Length: 254
Image 1 (tube, rainbow, N blue to C red):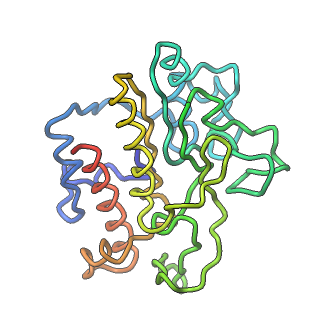
Image 2: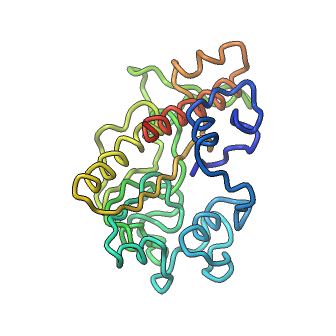
């Protein structure tokens, strides 16, 4: 799942500017569910309905940063785990907080203990997850902000920076390694070994990969922004982070 990706922002839906060769190939050779509509127009209820098959008002998450996945809900991951599947979640969760100990992301920490509901308590054995959004380049660093509404830009590697404030967690432990560069790659670097390990063991697996891109803060790394050099800063970053996401879909595809 991509986050805030526009219907018309991929080649297979007619976009002639944004480069998405891997998604185009997947669309051409795979199955397109063109009537598979989202259960809601915003983030969290869309995710919750994908996992439960229920309407957002049934499970109490009807907007972003509202409620949490309740333990009495049966998720797809829990159901498949009962049938012998390895289950993994990678990327954005946004269905509850991931820590009660320290301030994290939008709601994580001691003040919102009642909303603690991480993926590892909802059927996922292996997790590499954030509560909510992160910058799409260098996800742990607060990106440079242009004047007015100029958007964001990537920081130089040696530039001073502030922490963004949203952490990655693996089964209750904060992750601190391999978090630089393109965030879609950071996510896929964890998802691929999970799938490879299950395949080697001859075990069926259920991998949920929820990219942050291209949700704000939208930041493209220099090599991806360069592809769209003739465009303004907003478009360079937005187009570039979509192409970076597409590259990671290609890794999965191949």
